[in-house]
Image 1 (tube, one colour):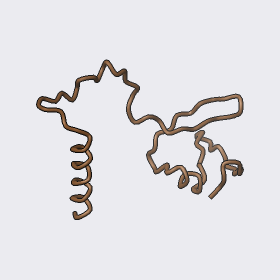
Image 2 (cartoon, helix red, strand yellow; image 1 turned 180 degrees about the vertical axis):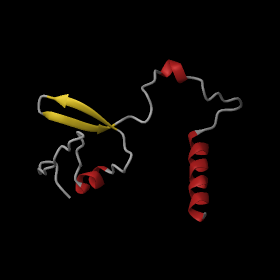
Image 3 (cartoon, one colour; image 1 turned 90 degrees about the horizontal axis):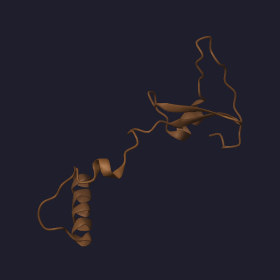
Length: 91
């Protein structure tokens, strides 16, 4: 697996496509179909995974998961998460 400072080479195809070396794709966990952003920087081209969701402001989503009833405690939330983890481990 290449280290961040190791250099590898690739070629731009006649269609403008570039193949990223498998070791880098594996290290980054970039599976086929992964969308990447391409940024032109003074040092070169920067590839980053594209965000799955568009940026959102808190005001746009605040209250979208309305809850009626008594608020639960942190201990109750922890117990519910642990119970679900145990259930999934059995399945």
